[in-house]
Structure formats: C-alpha cells, structure tokens
Amino acid sequence: MTDLLPFIEGLPKAELHVHHVGSASPRIVSELAARHPDTKVPLDPGTLAEYFTFTDFAHFVEVYLSVVDLVRTPDDVRLLTFEVARDMARQNIRYAELTVTPFSSTRRGIPEQGFMEAIEDARKAAETELGVLLRWCFDIPGEAGLDAAEETARLAVDLRPEGLVSFGLGGPEIGVPRPQFKPYFDRAIAAGLRSVPHAGETTGPQTVWDALNDLRAERIGHGTSAPQDPELLAYLAEHRIPLEVCPTSNIATRAVATLDEHPVREMVAAGVLVTVNSDDPPMFGTDLNNEYAVAARLLELDERGVAALAKNAVEASFLDPSGKARIAGEIDAYTEQWLAK
Picture 1 (cartoon, rainbow, N blue to C red):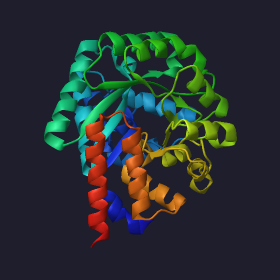
Picture 2: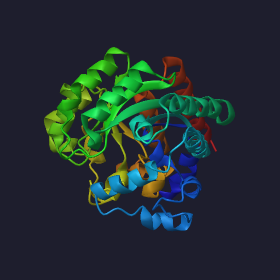
Picture 3: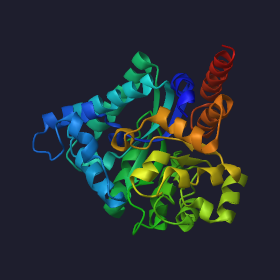
Picture 4: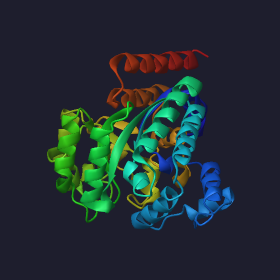
C-alpha cells in the first residue's frame, strides 16, 4: 500500500461522496470555533483528533452537528467551502460533488439567499484559482424529519444554485425509513436533479432496495450491507448503479468492524461499479489519497488498477461528457507517464 502512495498522490481524481461541513480541516474548525466561543468544540487543532473519536454512528452524528453549529454566517459558509476546495486541490482532486445540507444552516439563521451566494462564490473561485470543479448535492438530514425534507426540496427546486446537480438523504438510517421521503425526491427529480441517497450503511439491504424503488436512486451512498443480498448485488451490477464506498468512514462509525472485513471485495467481485470516497475526511483522520491506498490494499491493485478505480468515479459522476473525457484522459496520461519512468 505504501509503495503506491506516491502514484496515488499525483493521480487526477474525482470524488462523489464527501460532506461539506464534514470536510472542515482542524485548522478551519479551530478558526470557526474561535469566531464562536460559546461552542463546546475544542479550539486547539491538536485536541480535535480525540474529539473526533466516535463510539458509534449516533455519537458521530452528535459531534458532526456540533461542528455544523460553528457555521453561522454566509462568511463562515464561504470560508469553509473555499478551504475544502483548497484541501482537494492539494490531493489532485479535479472534480467533486460536495454534499451540502442547507437546512442545517438556514435553520440556524443564515439567510437562504446568502447561503446560496456564499457557496456559489466559493465554487467559482475554486475553479478559477485552484482548478477544482465543485458541484453540489443538497441532502436531507434524515434525523430532522419531513419538515427538513420539505425545506430542502424547496431550497433545491425554487432557489436552485447553478452548481446543484443532485438530491440526497443523509443522517442516521435506523428509525428513518427511506420510503417516507419519496414525494421530496419525486419533486427534485422532476426538476432535473439526480437521486443519490445514503442507504445500507448501518442498516440492511432492504434500505438499499427502498432507495432504489422509492427514491429512484442513481447512485447509492455507502451501500455497505449490499453484499448480504446476492440478488441486490446482481441488480446493482446489471443496472450499473454505482456504490459510493468510504472504507475508513465505515470503520470510524462502527458500520464495519475492521478494514479487513470491509465488503468492498464482494462488491467488486460481483461486478458492481465501485467508487472510492472519503465522506468526512478530517473527522475520520483520512483523505481521498488514503482511501485509495486502503482500497488498493484490500483489492490487491497495482497502478493500472488504481487508475481504473479513479476512472470509475469519473464515469459515475454527473459531470458533462466532455468534462468526463478530459479527466479520464488526464488519468490515462498520468498513468502511462508514471509507468514509463
């Protein structure tokens, strides 16, 4: 795994499952915490690693929401968004679909138009200054219920920012059945957005089936339990429905016990289109480069195998065809140049 790290670090990449607030680096979290001293989030970047040690998924959500509470103004939103893009640029991420939860910000008093302007300003600056293309997935925080779903759908459809491409559903799965969100996904899909709910992360394969049948999912966030149902795996492979796999995240939230037990091998063996992602990277002590290194070890990949994995993310993205061809071409050129050394 270590031998492939230099190759991975320079490899052009796309990322499809990464959360906006969850991507805040310790430096940015500390800066936001200093702006809002009433928070319980540690001000010292060095103590954040301990703060970001989770006992289970419920504890992760609790800590995650404490960081969400640090984002209180449009200026906070703009700072966070651009700095996330800066971290992506350092990893040679060319394109990312960033999962944004606008309800969490607007309910805390950030004006909805100010929120949209802040993320869009950061998106345009990231493309111009950093060479990173950002697109948005607006997701429903499932734990906040149908009021949050209604608000998220309204913001997505009525105030749709230029960079918005998809509609999602995050948060806890236990006690939050997917079918109840069907009307909101129907509305978003009718407006031209793509369906990308989380499913089967901490619950069983039925949650994935519900996401497919009720929410018309075009990609599945996590899908960790899918290998428990061979029929589901066969369906995902046949219909070329990608899984957004986040190995280290699954360990950190206790969705999977150990990396060696991670079901990504079964997913790939079944012919499912697997993409590799970082989810909430600083909170899980990882980044996309590390996730590729983990996947390379689990799947026993060489450089060409890692490059093929990177091209999976490009294929599964909602980037336009010319954009896909450009990044795929960069991956091929980089790989051939590397192997010719």
